[in-house]
Amino acid sequence: MMYKPQVSNPTGWWNILLYFLSPLALLLVVVCIIAFLDRVGQHNRLVNLMSTRGAIVEATVSRLDPEKGLVFLDYRLDGEERIGLLYTRYYPDALDVLAPGNQILARVDRSGVEALAVWEDRFSQFRGYLGFATDLAVIFAAGWLVLVLRPEILYVGLSGPETTAPGESSK
Amino acid sequence: MTLDVFAFFMAGILGEIALLWESAQRGGSKLAGRFGAPVSIARFTALAAILVAIGFSLSASPLGLDQVIVSLDDLWVGYIFAGLGLFVLAVGLVSDVFLPRVGERSVIAVQILVVLFTVTAQRTPAWPLYLALTALPLIGSLSLAISRRNLSPAVQALVYFGYLLALLALTLQVADLGLFEAVRMDHWQALAFGGLFFFLAVHTLFILRFFLIVSSLLIPRNRPLAAGIMPRLFSSEQVSFKRFGLFTLLLSALVLLNNWLNLLPAELLAGLAVMMGVQVMESE
Image (cartoon, rainbow over all chains, first blue to last red; front, side, top):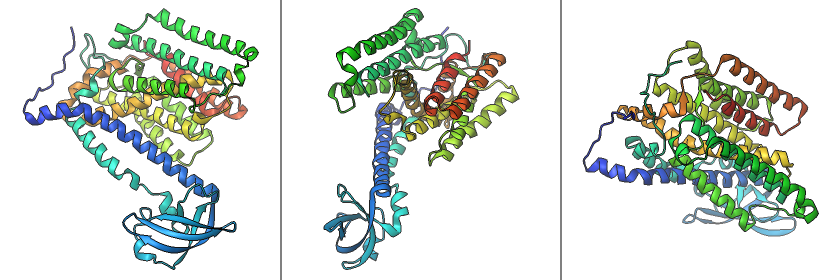
């Protein structure tokens, strides 16, 4: 005899909506995880790059761009004038603290491939930054909630017992 | 990696697919039973894949194929991995065809092996997290085993989740130690790595699904759903204590010996020990 779990079968527009949303929620959760891992990988790559190939230079703040969240730095490395970009997302108070003409210690990519500059005095803030996960966390939470309320889609393809009800098998 | 090594890698994946499918059939997977090949054909497929890889590598040298380097930058390799990725996504999210059934003792064995590996192998910065992911559920599993109580489906689900967390900790460490980016591998390492890669990929994806299932148990009306599937994933019947003890000791000794003698990459051996622990100690 096929085991049939006693599950309530609620109707109502709210439950029907959740039933329809649950496959989408599952895909959203998976995409969120993949996107999160990708962003973590990118961030770790930048942290490693700055830790291993970064050069510490004396940089001058040339201008601020609050709309784009950027602080432009001028610095000199290996006899070459370069421009570095300080992203304010890593340092929320940067636009209040820094002004054109200020001099700061910055860590930059010695090879010049990355335009990113890291504020050396606040390297730990850069390293521990998790802001890339905020939007993903919201989407993940929404998908998680739908699946907690209506998890039936998660059981697709999982085999139930043929004749044994739960609790009957013993050690 | 070179083309002949890649052949061994793919043979490892195919071999593990066949072995896991066979495991799932024995574990009661209806999908594996309906569409899967009989056990003898699955074993034959695994053996054939290995023989083809051997044959390929033997003939590769005269043809110069062992000098051909393949990577993800090659289009055809990209297609293979994209197809493999979609396949793993599908089987992880909407089927159980590659999930062996585990029991309390095989879960404990896996957790012990992963804790041993975490503590003895090269430490990565996040090793305390990996240790916590495995050691805490191990303490729970051991106390349940010692208490000798019948486990309710909800508790079985938590024990199974602890097993999946151990596999996740192993996957993350293997990734941290760079095995997934290893450029130089010999044929047999590639074969083992192919099998390990597929095993961890399927289980890592299933962790997400099972996390969502366990989360849904917060709502009491969802608990009968989980109760229905736990007999497929978790068996209350135990392998004999002798078999459990022997295999756990043997595999643990292998992991420790390898750390001392440095014969194989530690993370590769730990992964193989875990796979063997799950598939050899499958409850009857």
